[in-house]
Image 1: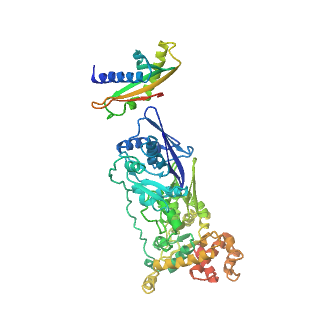
Image 2 (image 1 turned 135 degrees about the vertical axis):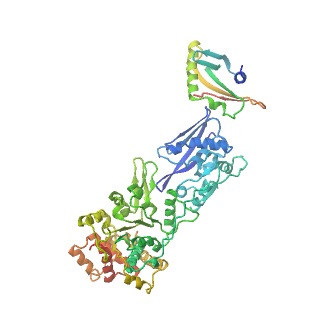
Image 3 (image 1 turned 135 degrees about the horizontal axis):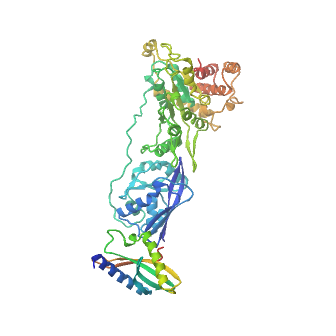
Length: 511
Length: 118
């Protein structure tokens, strides 16, 4: 048969579409034609494939080879199709078994010497293959551990095209080659410090515990040196381990972003702290042909920390409003729409004014009033409205420093146990609903028949609403935080102190 | 005659024998005009076949077929038209073929015939 057929995956965001690769051999002058909307990197595959096949000793026939990638209308990009194209062409010429390659999905880029190079995004691609019903995939040896993370999938790791051809019944002698591994990125120090390093600021620590327990977004306001960055860096440590589904998603995003994945799924929530010069595309993701995930997608199921938030471009910050609302990042381009998960916990930190001293007890602010006003106005109202906990952090005093040695401090491990217990309470309560965290629950549900709090409990909150101190949306947010406080305190329902504390965590910002 | 021309002439000889044994009638060989040369012109039933012969002593510098480029095929088509003008009533359809002859210094000669290359 002069036709070889196999399969590969084209990724768009985290979703993969199965692409059929057909190779036809016709009696005509030697040539290689690749059709089916390839991008430049994929269009160059024909040269890589021919050189790799010749140099690995399983040369392509001196005939015209036509390779079609279908569905033809789907734009395809990247170099991960090389292995499939080479094997389809070899099957068309009868060098390897056409039945054998028809059952396997192939991912891999070819080097000119015939060795296979690891590619980005193998984990989401193999997941897509698994969902499409494939049970066997062939990947470069350098990607083997990543592909093996997908359950119920037979992974065949091959170092070169020659070995791939031998596996598919090609009659060649095996030739040992040096495996091309993924360049290992310099290890980023993962230890973000322990909660017990924090001196003083016990109500700031409590606020972080509430944020961790309910998954609430946090805004920290305070003068330089108050420990805002220290607090934010410790939040991921307070979060419980990721569940298997979330772990798979976090690892998939890492794979897609070209970060090392390793042989184990990431089980700790990620922390992303982009610099304030980040553009909207760097935050949410972008790109014209290949759409890449941004910092917000990489922080999904973890923490996105924006230090010096008012210094960010307002357009970049407002790009986060849509994922904050829907939990999904959608990037629209002329030829495609890519979706990434966007369930990050947002932590923003800011100085109260350009000089940073406004409101500090120990020093004087030197900013003119209008520049002070303009500084925080750079954070748009709709964005701040989505943040449940807005908290003012103060510098510690010498008295607090002296007291710190005498009081027992809370370690990250203990705090995480408390948070996990609180989350379990919330999950048990919300078992019959689509939500899992207090921060996801809509206000109408909290004010509904089942969970409505007694008028006595909400009296202070009702008064704030009457006076116009908070809006109706703010009212709902206070209720959510109150439920998180109750979960942390191991109470079945929030009482009036919880509501009072929640109101304090919401209102601490206004002077 | 240079060595490469000797090899070329030998290849054309072998290609002609191959065509005759395949039942084709040879009409012309090394037909020249101002625009170039046709290696072999033959008749295969109703088709007039223009054959480009490429001869190599090895495939170390590529397969003979690989040296037949799109430009060369275009020139063959032009030459075919000129030949047909010069020989009116010689046939209904025109076909362009290529024959690769590999003549190694030792071992058997290899002949490959591609039909309808354009």
